[in-house]
Image (tube, rainbow, N blue to C red; front, top):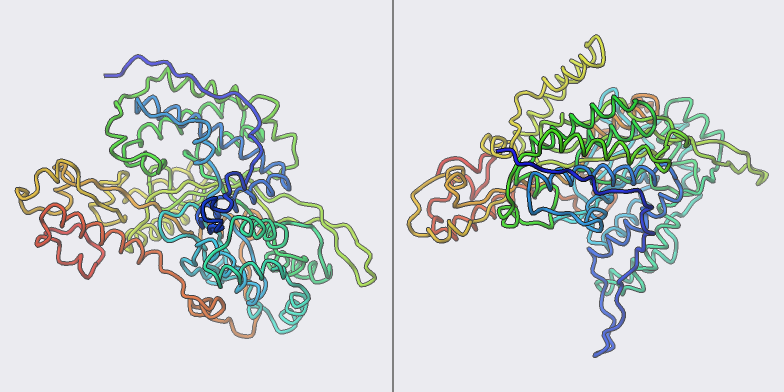
Amino acid sequence: AILAQTATFRWAFRPTPPVTPFEGMGGPDEASGVVPFADRLEMQHHLFAELSQMFATEVPLYSKSLEVNRVSNRAAADLLSLKFAGFELSDDRLGQVSGERHGAIRIGTAEEYRWVGRFFRVFAMEPHGFYDMTDLGAKSQPIIATAFRSSQQPEHRMFTSLLRTDYFDEATRSRIEAQLAKRQVVSDRARQLIEKSEQYGGLSWVDAKELIREAAQHIFKWTGRGWNQQLYDDLCKAGFKIAADVACFETHHLNHLTPNTFCMDLYTASMKFCLREIDAAAFRSRATEALQQLQLAADCHLMQLLFRHITWQDIETYSLSEPSTQCLDELVDGLALALSEPAFALHEMNHMGFKDHTEGPPASVPVLLRQDAYKALPENAEFEGEDSECSPATHTARFGEIEQRFYATTAAGRALYDRCLSNATAAQASASDPSSAARAYVEAFSQFPTTLEGLSEQGLVHCRYEPTLSGLAARGSIERADVNTLVLRGFVHREGQRYEDFLPFSAAGIFASNLKQYGTECTAVQKPQYTQATLEDVLNQRIIDPIATCREVERSSLQETYDKLGLKDQLPSNVSVYGESPVAGG
């Protein structure tokens, strides 16, 4: 039954407290006098906090977009609190889970790239996945990449691309390489600290703090100082805007940071309303539809996906109800009122608008990730000439991305996604109007189940499993059954693994909208072929296969679960060698 409820939108504008990246860093142990190593995962948090503060200072619109995301996430969390009585999200926790999980940086030379890889290793961030952005058809760009992140329960990752100068004709290649040879981006002090960590197995908090600030100032910071304006102009005119961004400035720089949203469609509606791309009536309609979709999709699995700090045992203690239409209306009213305050007058700021279309699956298909962005802003720059005189210019590269992550797909799930995406892209292109294009896009993904149960049972997503208390109590008396049946009987809990990686085609779509062009064709006599080994040779490090990691997590959790339930001899035969159907009958 629908319970009588009152929705109170628990938000009023107040500036986000200043970020204090190094708060809580420890000193020497008082008993022994030994300086402990900094925790590498905590170092990641501090690094991204420092980058967030830096980027928000450099790009005021980005700072405001963080506030829009926070207020949108508060509305989504309040809706979930109504549906799951007992669930609460404090302002501090809201800030943590709304923060940046992703960033991107573009590197110019193999030596720079190798040093950046060593830098991330200090933070326990290893290369995951190989991405060949030169092989995306009409959306191709002259870069290859990997994403640095932790292997277990990652919270942050940095997509790090390397410019491939052999993608260009010999004359252009020589000009780019000559320009890149003039700079050293990773400072001597940063190199010393990286080598110190490698030698001793870690850094003290004092050294960690220094390395983070050194990196922020020299690896990630935008200075706006460029060299060789003629090369810059020639590359941009030829369509190689990414190459110009990488090669023609004194340092490489953070291209974007990506906060986490609980409801992509709610955030995009909020941003477009604040930018005055839609009016109040359109905003209310879109916000209501987005919250209705969230209400429909919200189950224990989505709660675990959104909020890692709560367990499925916690969720089982919540009382489930369905918020009334009145509650939904009140949440939308509160959100509209909050976003109408002067602090959210983003339309009065320097901006280029918001993307027209969210990249990734439709909202009803919880796989992989959805991405969107406000478009890149022209920023002031200056180019130093041969006479050391500086001439003013503008440069457009940095944009404001947002993401919402869902379940990691198996190979079969990814193949289905790619087919659906191809059909959706074709359907969009042939649609007569934007509304028809949106409907066609959603319909193209109709083969996908919309719940974790359906996705898992069809072998489309990776999960992890553990026995329930009921299952442990029934050990020794459980009849032979496959894992789906064990889940249905309440003996096993299933949790979807969150997708932690990158979608090249989606990213290329964002590149295209921000660069106001699609991809670029190779101008070399013969287009080079790039493989994972190409980038591993640059890094002098193995790149981890994220799909294999997901498979291993699922395989080991199944083995442990069957063992604890006394069903080890009934473990599906394909689990030991692990195929793509771990739920096949046992």
